Each structure stands twice: as structure tokens, then as C-alpha cells.
Length: 384
Image 1 (cartoon, rainbow, N blue to C red):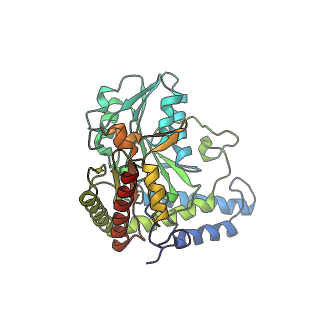
Image 2 (cartoon, rainbow, N blue to C red; image 1 turned 90 degrees about the horizontal axis):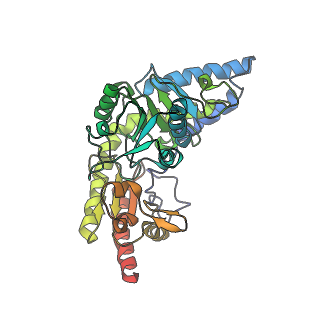
Image 3 (cartoon, rainbow, N blue to C red; image 1 turned 135 degrees about the vertical axis):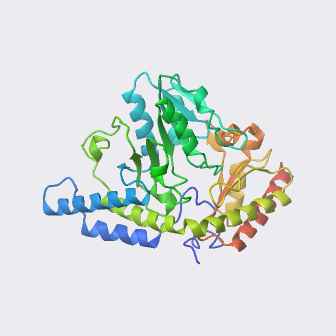
């Protein structure tokens, strides 16, 4: 199947950055257009056009929750996962001025901000060398003041899948709310939210083939303090006119991606194993950070003493889109925080590259990518 990438890359199947953003399903875009043109009224308006939009919004919201396996939940719409994570963390801590936060060391930047915003109220939850958080690890950090524990369902850099059931059971026993960042999980691995003991579950539609600018918080039983004022929408938790078409398109994408998990999951795991094996065999000293049972199609590798971002630039010139674990901050390259949390050194973590595959990735492209990565590493080591 051909992908929509030929205008950007030398090879039309050179896109290996699905974890950053998945190509939208055409059916989702069609649904977005249909709803935008037909139900453009403001759902808060009392006239017929507004009420028709409200009716559609309510129906789509109900169907979306049902598709996640949690029909009894509450869905608060946001502009994406960054806002959703901010709403949960700020909303809980602002509502509990003396409360403390237990934050996973591999948290996405949209949650990691809390370490800077609430430095004296935040405790860091470290994973083991394999990236997983042991079920007994949170207990040592929990106290009567703990208001929230925040973890990733699946790591955005490493693809490591956490045991949410076990971690949630520890939090529930202590009477502590659990926030699960499900951005890399929903629509990519089997997820039935009714089986997971969380208080808040956040997601972003463009990660599973929906439109950008659509995300949300699925709430089980906990209270939040709104972070965007100016309207009573979303049960008073998020002001602003609701994105009816966006949620409708997200539902279409979630339905398509969820239905393909059983077939695509095994295929992408095979491709990931192929890529990881090829890289191990051809690049001396390379470290593989991801695991075979992680998010399907995601491979994280670290090449010691090289810079991930420089590898990414060279791979792009060769027609392959991958991403780096390192990031530029304060004028210098910073190593991947999630990879360092696994025990890697700074020199190792700086050379981190993430390869993430999806529905348009072919075996031939995966093999060509592994060859290109070897060539890039050899070139950069020769120049070092």
C-alpha cells in the first residue's frame, strides 16, 4: 500500500516516525469535512443549528468512550495531549495546595514540566534497567500528602509498556489518584479502559490516525480544577467551543486503528525485531533500549559517542524520517531523559535514535533503513 509521503522523502515508504504523528486515515478526514460542513453551529447555542451540533457531540462522545471500553467514563475534550496532561496535573495539584505529585522519570515533557513548576512537591518515580516501573516501587514514595501519581502507559521514546493494573492497584490501596498518559497506547495496543484502575487517562488523536488539535482526558471518579476559564463547556472543566468535527474524526480513526491492532500488531513486532536484529549485527557497540514486547513497531537504539540529532539529519538526507532522543536546550544538546532513567550514561543517551513504524511500513523499507543507519553511523564515526 502506498503512503502519502512521496513529496517529502526520496522513497515513499521512508517515514519511520509514527510515534511522533501517524498519517491520518482518509475516512477520518472525510468525516471531519462532513461534520464541519453540516454541523457547524456552536453546541452552546440554543437555536436549531446549535442543538443539532450538541446532539452530534453528545452521540460521538458516548461512542468514543464505548470504543475505549469505558462507557461509564467522563470525556473532557482538549486541544491535544499536552493540554490534557497539564489539565490533570495542574488541575489536581491546584485543587490540593498541600498535595504532592509522584512523577515517572520517563514522563513526556507535557507532564515533566511539573518538576520545574512544583519542585518542592514532586517526587520522581524511577524505572528499572528495562524501563519498567516495578509494582512495589511507588509505595516507597506515597504518603498521606500524595495527591497524584503520573505514569506513561507506553513510553514515547522507548515504547516500554507499563503494568498499569499492578501500579494502579498500589495507588488504589493507598487512596491516591493515578494519571495514565495513554498517548502511545490508545489505538496502538489492546486497551480496555474499564479493566485499568486509573483516575485520569489522556490521549491524542493524531497518534492513531486522527486529526491534530484533538485530545482529551477520560475521567473515572476524580475532581479537577479547570485551567482554561471563559466558558462552562466540558462540565466546567475546559472553556472554549467544542470541536465537534474533530472528535467525530477521532472516533473514526480510533475505530479503524483499534480494529487493525490484532493484525498490525504482530506484523509491526516482526518488523521491529528485524530492524533491531539488523542494527545489532551491523553496528558495533549499539544499545537497544526498546523491548520486543513494547509498542509494536517502535525501536529505540543508542549509539555511544555520537549525537542522535546528527544521525537524524543525515538519515533525512538519505530519505528516511526518524527522530532523536536528544534535544537542544540552553544552546547545547541534552541526552534522552527516559533512556538515562534506564541507567544509560550521558554519552550513550546522547546518541539515541527512535525508529517507529506503522501501517505503510514495508519489510523492504525496514531493511533499507537498517542499511542506511549503518552507513550513517560508519560515516559519522569516521568523522568524529
